[in-house]
Image 1 (cartoon, rainbow, N blue to C red):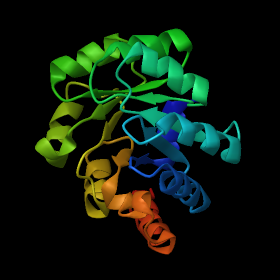
Image 2 (cartoon, rainbow, N blue to C red):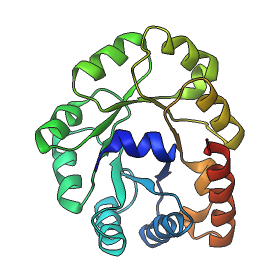
Image 3 (cartoon, helix red, strand yellow):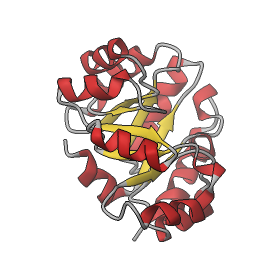
Image 4 (cartoon, helix red, strand yellow):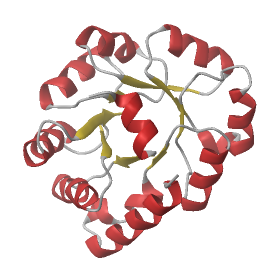
Length: 206
């Protein structure tokens, strides 16, 4: 899987994080059925590895399913073994180098220009601008000047309206958690999740 191509094409990464493994799995599958084709399961979720394994079995080998909040090399290896096709980190962490050793693309967390350089030099496929809400779209626009060739994926507080603003300021894609998932990760209404997915897909459409 070419993560950068997937991000450029689809422009929406769903972030699934929750305390109920069955509900989280249902949310992943509902997102996939709704046309969201980039999904990460946060390692802070209850039974995250089990969710990834079951989702991989259900969705097949080609679906862009990743593991998020991957910090350690051990977690990177465990996520890969469970079927994650890419890794996402909240910061520059040992998982970045381990992802490279495993041959997995890594969306690495960074906020400052120095961190962007460090993550890029460390082999990051793209930069997870986190928490994006601290600077907003204008901050992303400022980063684009010194880093015109860097793929940025803002994450943190991105709603449907914000998604469009970030993309207009040069984001490659946006990562969205609770504004998209809502209560679905706790067993909430799947129909409402589908409706939110449709709204976000419309917001990121070129």
